[in-house]
Length: 69
Image: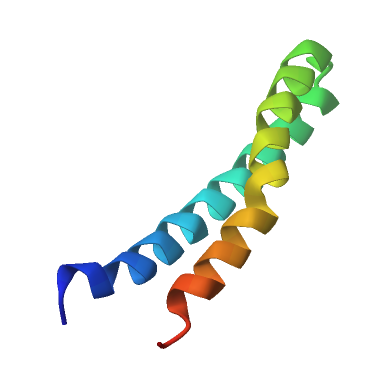
């Protein structure tokens, strides 16, 4: 297997890690908001928005890269 063949699998694993971090950050955001830290919650939600915005493109691109020729 060439290094180039490993790229789709690597990107898939990185995306899995990103989604896990997104979930963890959301849990912390909810906790902070529950404690009254609304500004912290707003800032975290703003950062999470970028992950959410790009998720569909990443999934589609990974599907193309992982499709055998």
